Image (tube, rainbow, N blue to C red):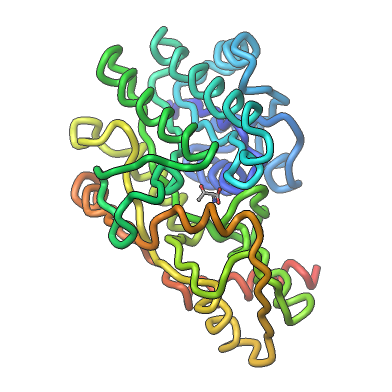
Length: 317
Ligand code: AKB
């Protein structure tokens, strides 16, 4: 019989698409979506949904018992830009939710869990190009500090208590189904919406801020592949570097202009520039390739083509 999976933060940018992909694989009834608010109609109508605050251990435990959950994907988090505005709320949300699921696994109430880390674990003293799996980190943002601490806790719970926790350091993620919220890489989603709606976009990062990015289909496939892989093969129990493409705002504008030649881009960098400046430009993901066969499929032009096609369809409805 297929196992029951619980997604925490299922209505967010990653959670929505992850839930739908897992429902396709395991059957709708086997994948319970949960969040503190309701999500889009496709998610809400395709399977079970629970209003659930992942910081509440008792509520979480109750849902796990009720649905006989074996696997949890914890996708609830406060992202980089919002975390700078609300440091203690960010710390509480990002850390308490992680402790809750790690402790459920430690107590044998679930078998396996996924927790997302980020390129934000790196900081200004990290090598910028082809950033290695293991290197100087020293994150300079509230979000990055919570992600680096979280990685150490994942590693510790695995080593000390044998908890089967798996994690990826996501780059900026580009998707059309659900918009991201409160991140520094969000411009790379907003730009497609604005290009189609107004043929112009004012970017909050400088033209040459090159960051690691990934199309959502690649991110979902990576997440599911990592969770499916044989635990014995996994040499990293903090979090895996994961790369696909790197581009700057100027590069994405050029890619859009191949489809919309009159598209205009302006630049008005704000506080998010400092966050972007502290992150790597490209990522060495050779450990993920070696351990569980990771390989990306989307480059910038394929991402642009796919985003514009889906958003055009969505806008026409
Ligand atoms: C953010 O910009 O905060 C996120 C991330 C890179 O983790 N997209």
